[in-house]
Length: 78
Image (cartoon, rainbow, N blue to C red; front, side, top):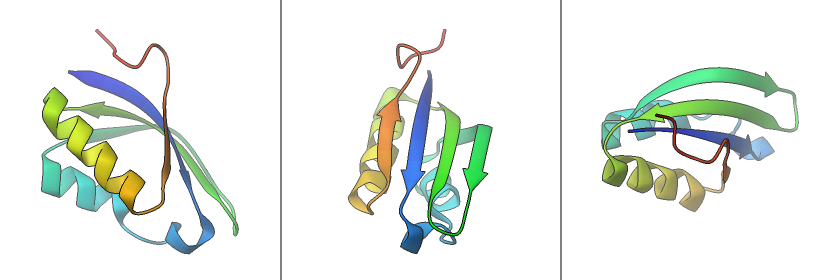
């Protein structure tokens, strides 16, 4: 399953390895489609690939850390 999401990172998380940690812990393969990082905010559009359960758990994990997650493009890519 593939899902496209937009992540918005608060300033204190910009330099943290959030995506790497999620990918390793939940066996989700991220594909960065677009990214913009400034001193105050980070925005990233990712395509996530994995099982539905792993993707949902990974998204929950990064939301719990304070990253805003929005599903985009109808949320599932065939």
